[in-house]
Image 1 (cartoon, protein in one colour):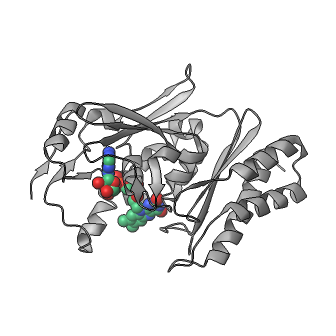
Image 2 (tube, protein in one colour; image 1 turned 60 degrees about the vertical axis):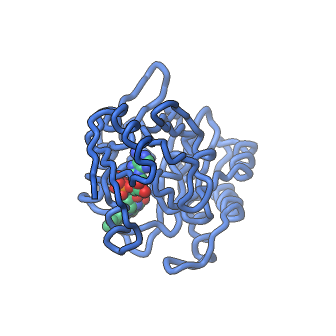
Length: 277
Ligand SMILES: Cc1cc2nc3c(=O)[nH]c(=O)nc-3n(C[C@H](O)[C@H](O)[C@H](O)COP(=O)(O)OP(=O)(O)OC[C@H]3O[C@@H](n4cnc5c(N)ncnc54)[C@H](O)[C@@H]3O)c2cc1C
Protein backbone atom coordinates (compact mmCIF):
# COMPACT_ATOMS: atom_id res chain seq x y z
CA UNK A 1 0.00 0.00 0.00
CA UNK A 2 1.65 3.28 -1.07
CA UNK A 3 1.69 5.96 1.63
CA UNK A 4 2.50 9.41 0.30
CA UNK A 5 3.85 11.95 2.76
CA UNK A 6 3.66 15.35 1.06
CA UNK A 7 5.60 18.21 2.60
CA UNK A 8 3.63 21.10 1.10
CA UNK A 9 0.01 21.99 0.41
CA UNK A 10 0.69 22.12 -3.34
CA UNK A 11 2.21 18.63 -3.25
CA UNK A 12 -0.71 17.28 -1.19
CA UNK A 13 -3.42 18.61 -3.52
CA UNK A 14 -1.47 17.48 -6.60
CA UNK A 15 -1.12 13.96 -5.14
CA UNK A 16 -4.83 13.84 -4.35
CA UNK A 17 -5.82 15.06 -7.82
CA UNK A 18 -3.99 12.09 -9.35
CA UNK A 19 -5.10 9.61 -6.63
CA UNK A 20 -8.74 10.49 -6.06
CA UNK A 21 -9.39 7.21 -4.20
CA UNK A 22 -6.57 7.86 -1.73
CA UNK A 23 -7.49 7.98 1.96
CA UNK A 24 -6.38 11.14 3.74
CA UNK A 25 -4.71 10.60 7.09
CA UNK A 26 -3.95 13.16 9.78
CA UNK A 27 -3.70 11.75 13.33
CA UNK A 28 -5.17 8.38 12.33
CA UNK A 29 -7.24 8.14 15.53
CA UNK A 30 -10.43 7.51 13.54
CA UNK A 31 -9.00 6.01 10.41
CA UNK A 32 -6.75 3.39 12.01
CA UNK A 33 -9.65 2.16 14.16
CA UNK A 34 -11.64 1.58 10.96
CA UNK A 35 -8.70 -0.21 9.34
CA UNK A 36 -8.17 -2.37 12.45
CA UNK A 37 -11.86 -3.34 12.47
CA UNK A 38 -11.67 -4.18 8.77
CA UNK A 39 -14.21 -1.46 7.95
CA UNK A 40 -11.82 0.38 5.66
CA UNK A 41 -9.31 -0.95 3.15
CA UNK A 42 -7.18 1.90 1.86
CA UNK A 43 -5.15 1.10 -1.23
CA UNK A 44 -3.40 4.45 -1.16
CA UNK A 45 -2.88 6.81 1.78
CA UNK A 46 -1.89 10.48 1.76
CA UNK A 47 -0.56 11.38 5.22
CA UNK A 48 -0.99 15.09 5.88
CA UNK A 49 0.82 15.62 9.20
CA UNK A 50 4.02 16.91 7.53
CA UNK A 51 2.28 19.70 5.57
CA UNK A 52 3.40 22.87 7.40
CA UNK A 53 0.31 24.91 6.40
CA UNK A 54 -1.93 22.41 8.20
CA UNK A 55 0.06 22.57 11.44
CA UNK A 56 -0.21 26.33 11.88
CA UNK A 57 -2.61 28.41 13.94
CA UNK A 58 -2.82 32.11 14.65
CA UNK A 59 -4.98 34.65 16.41
CA UNK A 60 -5.67 37.75 14.32
CA UNK A 61 -6.73 40.32 16.92
CA UNK A 62 -7.46 43.01 14.31
CA UNK A 63 -9.77 40.85 12.22
CA UNK A 64 -10.98 39.20 15.47
CA UNK A 65 -10.64 35.68 14.10
CA UNK A 66 -8.60 32.58 14.90
CA UNK A 67 -7.28 30.35 12.16
CA UNK A 68 -6.52 26.73 13.07
CA UNK A 69 -4.86 24.42 10.55
CA UNK A 70 -6.47 21.05 10.00
CA UNK A 71 -3.59 19.05 11.54
CA UNK A 72 -3.26 21.06 14.78
CA UNK A 73 -3.81 18.49 17.55
CA UNK A 74 -6.35 18.90 20.36
CA UNK A 75 -3.44 19.07 22.83
CA UNK A 76 -2.56 22.50 21.40
CA UNK A 77 -6.12 23.78 21.93
CA UNK A 78 -6.41 22.70 25.56
CA UNK A 79 -4.13 25.33 27.11
CA UNK A 80 -2.36 28.59 26.35
CA UNK A 81 -3.31 31.30 23.88
CA UNK A 82 -5.73 29.20 21.85
CA UNK A 83 -7.61 28.16 24.98
CA UNK A 84 -7.82 31.78 26.13
CA UNK A 85 -9.19 32.90 22.77
CA UNK A 86 -11.58 29.96 22.35
CA UNK A 87 -12.54 28.59 25.80
CA UNK A 88 -15.38 26.44 24.43
CA UNK A 89 -13.05 24.75 21.97
CA UNK A 90 -10.54 24.18 24.79
CA UNK A 91 -13.28 22.58 26.93
CA UNK A 92 -14.31 20.36 24.03
CA UNK A 93 -10.68 19.44 23.26
CA UNK A 94 -10.08 18.43 26.91
CA UNK A 95 -12.95 15.92 26.70
CA UNK A 96 -11.59 14.11 23.63
CA UNK A 97 -10.29 10.61 24.37
CA UNK A 98 -7.02 10.38 26.31
CA UNK A 99 -3.82 12.48 26.22
CA UNK A 100 -2.50 10.13 23.50
CA UNK A 101 -5.59 10.69 21.34
CA UNK A 102 -5.44 14.45 21.94
CA UNK A 103 -1.77 14.51 20.89
CA UNK A 104 -2.69 13.05 17.50
CA UNK A 105 -6.38 13.84 16.82
CA UNK A 106 -7.21 16.99 14.88
CA UNK A 107 -10.04 19.23 13.71
CA UNK A 108 -9.33 18.08 10.14
CA UNK A 109 -10.02 14.50 11.23
CA UNK A 110 -13.10 15.40 13.31
CA UNK A 111 -14.49 17.30 10.29
CA UNK A 112 -13.43 14.53 7.92
CA UNK A 113 -15.28 11.90 9.95
CA UNK A 114 -18.18 14.29 10.56
CA UNK A 115 -19.84 12.21 13.27
CA UNK A 116 -22.70 14.01 15.07
CA UNK A 117 -20.79 12.99 18.25
CA UNK A 118 -17.58 14.77 17.20
CA UNK A 119 -16.73 17.03 20.14
CA UNK A 120 -15.32 19.95 18.16
CA UNK A 121 -18.31 20.17 15.84
CA UNK A 122 -20.95 21.83 18.10
CA UNK A 123 -18.28 24.39 18.98
CA UNK A 124 -17.51 25.12 15.33
CA UNK A 125 -21.24 25.44 14.67
CA UNK A 126 -22.02 27.74 17.63
CA UNK A 127 -18.99 29.93 16.88
CA UNK A 128 -19.98 30.31 13.20
CA UNK A 129 -16.72 28.79 11.99
CA UNK A 130 -15.77 28.71 8.33
CA UNK A 131 -14.29 25.47 6.96
CA UNK A 132 -11.60 25.85 4.28
CA UNK A 133 -11.12 23.31 1.51
CA UNK A 134 -8.44 23.24 -1.15
CA UNK A 135 -8.09 21.25 -4.36
CA UNK A 136 -5.27 21.48 -6.87
CA UNK A 137 -7.16 24.18 -8.75
CA UNK A 138 -9.52 25.92 -6.33
CA UNK A 139 -10.21 27.03 -2.78
CA UNK A 140 -13.63 26.93 -1.12
CA UNK A 141 -14.78 28.28 2.23
CA UNK A 142 -18.03 26.94 3.66
CA UNK A 143 -20.08 27.70 6.74
CA UNK A 144 -20.29 24.77 9.13
CA UNK A 145 -23.96 24.18 8.15
CA UNK A 146 -22.97 23.99 4.47
CA UNK A 147 -20.11 21.63 5.30
CA UNK A 148 -21.87 19.00 7.45
CA UNK A 149 -24.75 17.55 5.46
CA UNK A 150 -25.57 14.32 7.33
CA UNK A 151 -24.30 11.72 9.78
CA UNK A 152 -20.69 11.10 8.69
CA UNK A 153 -21.40 13.05 5.49
CA UNK A 154 -19.89 16.33 4.45
CA UNK A 155 -19.68 18.37 1.28
CA UNK A 156 -15.96 17.82 0.69
CA UNK A 157 -15.31 16.86 -2.94
CA UNK A 158 -12.97 13.89 -3.66
CA UNK A 159 -10.17 16.20 -4.84
CA UNK A 160 -10.41 18.53 -1.83
CA UNK A 161 -8.45 18.60 1.42
CA UNK A 162 -9.71 20.36 4.55
CA UNK A 163 -6.95 22.90 5.19
CA UNK A 164 -8.31 24.47 8.37
CA UNK A 165 -11.02 26.57 9.97
CA UNK A 166 -11.48 30.24 10.68
CA UNK A 167 -13.33 30.95 13.92
CA UNK A 168 -14.61 34.46 14.74
CA UNK A 169 -13.79 35.56 18.28
CA UNK A 170 -16.77 36.26 20.50
CA UNK A 171 -16.94 39.16 22.93
CA UNK A 172 -19.00 37.22 25.49
CA UNK A 173 -18.86 33.97 27.44
CA UNK A 174 -18.63 30.58 25.70
CA UNK A 175 -18.69 27.04 27.03
CA UNK A 176 -19.07 23.37 26.11
CA UNK A 177 -20.56 20.50 28.07
CA UNK A 178 -20.96 16.84 27.25
CA UNK A 179 -22.57 13.78 28.77
CA UNK A 180 -21.20 10.29 28.19
CA UNK A 181 -21.56 6.89 29.78
CA UNK A 182 -18.59 7.68 32.03
CA UNK A 183 -16.45 10.74 32.76
CA UNK A 184 -13.38 10.10 30.59
CA UNK A 185 -12.42 8.39 27.32
CA UNK A 186 -15.96 8.56 26.11
CA UNK A 187 -17.86 9.48 22.98
CA UNK A 188 -20.63 11.92 23.84
CA UNK A 189 -24.25 10.81 24.10
CA UNK A 190 -25.31 14.47 24.22
CA UNK A 191 -23.35 17.70 23.99
CA UNK A 192 -24.03 21.43 23.92
CA UNK A 193 -21.99 24.49 23.04
CA UNK A 194 -23.33 27.88 24.09
CA UNK A 195 -21.67 31.14 23.06
CA UNK A 196 -22.59 34.76 23.69
CA UNK A 197 -21.65 37.47 21.21
CA UNK A 198 -22.86 41.08 21.29
CA UNK A 199 -25.25 40.04 24.08
CA UNK A 200 -26.87 37.36 21.88
CA UNK A 201 -26.87 33.63 22.62
CA UNK A 202 -25.97 30.90 20.14
CA UNK A 203 -26.51 27.21 20.89
CA UNK A 204 -25.46 24.09 19.01
CA UNK A 205 -26.13 20.45 19.95
CA UNK A 206 -24.14 17.28 19.28
CA UNK A 207 -25.21 13.62 19.30
CA UNK A 208 -28.93 14.45 19.20
CA UNK A 209 -29.59 14.51 15.47
CA UNK A 210 -28.18 13.48 12.11
CA UNK A 211 -26.06 16.63 12.03
CA UNK A 212 -25.04 19.20 14.62
CA UNK A 213 -28.21 21.17 15.41
CA UNK A 214 -28.19 24.96 15.69
CA UNK A 215 -31.16 25.84 17.91
CA UNK A 216 -32.42 28.89 16.03
CA UNK A 217 -35.82 28.97 17.78
CA UNK A 218 -34.33 28.72 21.26
CA UNK A 219 -31.76 31.37 20.32
CA UNK A 220 -34.48 33.74 19.08
CA UNK A 221 -36.55 33.15 22.23
CA UNK A 222 -33.76 33.76 24.75
CA UNK A 223 -32.52 36.77 22.81
CA UNK A 224 -36.02 38.28 22.92
CA UNK A 225 -36.14 37.64 26.69
CA UNK A 226 -32.75 39.34 27.12
CA UNK A 227 -29.72 38.03 29.02
CA UNK A 228 -30.24 40.55 31.82
CA UNK A 229 -33.54 38.79 32.64
CA UNK A 230 -32.14 35.26 32.87
CA UNK A 231 -32.87 33.55 36.17
CA UNK A 232 -33.32 29.88 37.08
CA UNK A 233 -36.91 29.76 35.77
CA UNK A 234 -35.93 31.33 32.43
CA UNK A 235 -32.97 28.95 32.17
CA UNK A 236 -35.32 25.98 32.70
CA UNK A 237 -37.64 27.27 29.99
CA UNK A 238 -34.67 27.76 27.70
CA UNK A 239 -33.62 24.16 28.41
CA UNK A 240 -37.12 22.96 27.49
CA UNK A 241 -36.98 24.86 24.19
CA UNK A 242 -33.54 23.42 23.37
CA UNK A 243 -34.88 19.94 24.22
CA UNK A 244 -37.73 20.49 21.76
CA UNK A 245 -35.27 21.31 18.95
CA UNK A 246 -33.22 18.12 19.45
CA UNK A 247 -33.91 15.11 17.21
CA UNK A 248 -32.21 12.19 18.99
CA UNK A 249 -32.50 8.48 18.29
CA UNK A 250 -32.13 5.38 20.46
CA UNK A 251 -28.86 3.58 19.83
CA UNK A 252 -26.27 1.42 21.62
CA UNK A 253 -24.98 4.44 23.58
CA UNK A 254 -28.24 5.86 24.93
CA UNK A 255 -31.95 6.36 24.50
CA UNK A 256 -33.52 9.26 22.65
CA UNK A 257 -35.44 10.18 25.79
CA UNK A 258 -32.28 10.49 27.93
CA UNK A 259 -30.45 12.46 25.23
CA UNK A 260 -33.37 14.90 24.91
CA UNK A 261 -33.41 15.37 28.68
CA UNK A 262 -29.61 15.77 28.83
CA UNK A 263 -29.34 18.56 26.23
CA UNK A 264 -32.04 20.50 28.07
CA UNK A 265 -30.18 20.22 31.37
CA UNK A 266 -26.81 21.08 29.80
CA UNK A 267 -28.20 24.08 27.91
CA UNK A 268 -29.87 25.49 31.03
CA UNK A 269 -26.65 25.06 33.04
CA UNK A 270 -24.50 26.66 30.35
CA UNK A 271 -26.87 29.61 30.10
CA UNK A 272 -26.66 30.17 33.86
CA UNK A 273 -22.88 29.88 33.72
CA UNK A 274 -22.87 32.34 30.82
CA UNK A 275 -24.75 34.96 32.82
CA UNK A 276 -23.04 33.81 36.07
CA UNK A 277 -26.15 33.07 38.12
C1 LIG B 1 -9.80 5.86 21.98
C2 LIG B 1 -10.46 6.96 21.16
C3 LIG B 1 -11.19 7.92 21.83
C4 LIG B 1 -11.81 8.94 21.09
N1 LIG B 1 -12.53 9.90 21.76
C5 LIG B 1 -13.11 10.89 21.07
C6 LIG B 1 -13.86 11.89 21.76
O1 LIG B 1 -13.98 11.89 22.99
N2 LIG B 1 -14.44 12.87 21.01
C7 LIG B 1 -14.31 12.93 19.64
O2 LIG B 1 -14.84 13.85 19.01
N3 LIG B 1 -13.62 11.98 18.97
C8 LIG B 1 -13.02 10.98 19.65
N4 LIG B 1 -12.32 10.00 18.97
C9 LIG B 1 -12.28 10.06 17.51
C10 LIG B 1 -11.07 10.85 16.92
O3 LIG B 1 -10.02 10.96 17.86
C11 LIG B 1 -11.46 12.27 16.49
O4 LIG B 1 -12.52 12.23 15.56
C12 LIG B 1 -10.29 13.03 15.86
O5 LIG B 1 -10.64 14.38 15.71
C13 LIG B 1 -9.87 12.47 14.51
O6 LIG B 1 -8.75 13.22 14.07
P1 LIG B 1 -7.54 12.50 13.31
O7 LIG B 1 -6.58 13.57 12.91
O8 LIG B 1 -6.97 11.40 14.12
O9 LIG B 1 -8.30 11.93 12.05
P2 LIG B 1 -7.92 10.70 11.04
O10 LIG B 1 -8.19 9.41 11.71
O11 LIG B 1 -6.56 10.92 10.47
O12 LIG B 1 -9.00 10.97 9.91
C14 LIG B 1 -10.38 10.86 10.18
C15 LIG B 1 -11.17 11.05 8.87
O13 LIG B 1 -10.97 12.36 8.38
C16 LIG B 1 -10.34 12.34 7.09
N5 LIG B 1 -9.37 13.42 7.10
C17 LIG B 1 -8.33 13.58 7.97
N6 LIG B 1 -7.71 14.74 7.72
C18 LIG B 1 -8.35 15.32 6.69
C19 LIG B 1 -8.16 16.54 5.96
N7 LIG B 1 -7.21 17.42 6.27
N8 LIG B 1 -9.01 16.80 4.93
C20 LIG B 1 -10.00 15.94 4.61
N9 LIG B 1 -10.23 14.79 5.26
C21 LIG B 1 -9.41 14.48 6.29
C22 LIG B 1 -9.73 10.96 6.98
O14 LIG B 1 -9.61 10.54 5.62
C23 LIG B 1 -10.71 10.12 7.77
O15 LIG B 1 -11.84 9.82 6.97
C24 LIG B 1 -11.68 8.98 19.67
C25 LIG B 1 -10.92 8.00 19.01
C26 LIG B 1 -10.32 7.00 19.75
C27 LIG B 1 -9.50 5.95 19.02
